[in-house]
Length: 320
Image 1 (tube, rainbow, N blue to C red):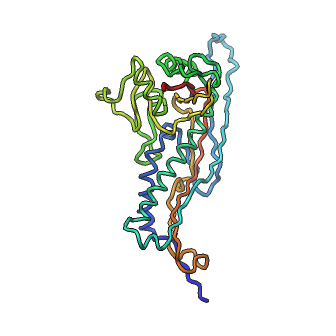
Image 2 (cartoon, one colour; image 1 turned 90 degrees about the vertical axis):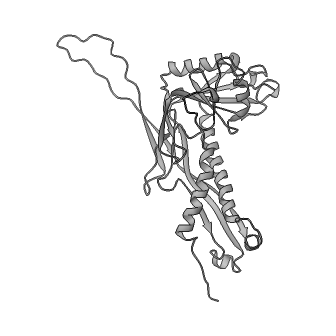
Image 3 (cartoon, one colour; image 1 turned 90 degrees about the horizontal axis):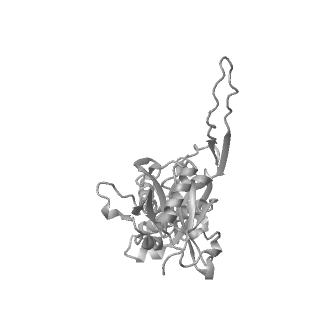
């Protein structure tokens, strides 16, 4: 029996589906927007090395005439991370494609795009929220000690900023562009806070809160809900929640406040994310009657905290 196989969808059509996927994925990538982006060249390795130089101690001793000082040595810390692959796919039957009025393949690409964006966003969030600089609301001392009354306040936010400043965390002046996913665009200097949508409700009732509709000339970022002190807050339902972890088994919400270069992300150049479409008949003898086609996505990604002192996790409750 003769075996006939066909390749993937033609290049031009596949490009169309790639764009549909990325348009859906990018708006969800809130956690990656303020990361250092360091892509790995293709055909090289899957390990990225972020290099950090320790600040030199201030030279406060006066020089002795005619005597060469001891001098300082550079202290270097290498932070490595391994890029991993993530992905999923959907199988479509020939009958489904033939009997529905909807452009099923296009709709599938959009749904996969939403899933891809959600996946990478949560992967980045999970790395960020594992940071070791933690502040408990009302000086609770531990996650399990947070009560329902320990809400986010201006004092809590100001204390978080004080900690970041003490740790020499610089303010953020740029973010990853939503239109490309890798280029950066400038923003006014600030610290960024990522909070849950439920936390926004409490922030809106805090004295000193400035909602985005009162910004005037300042342009709001995607997902931004307002400013409190020196922190601009971005809300997302993907913000971290530790369920049943507080006193009386309440949920504890984790708002992240951070400065520049606190964390980084990396991908393989040219393979950050793609939509892969296998048409009817492409499976050869595994699909002898051309009954199945698939649409999926695949991405290479890793996130890594680069400085634990520059990202603070504020744990608190929310009002009921």
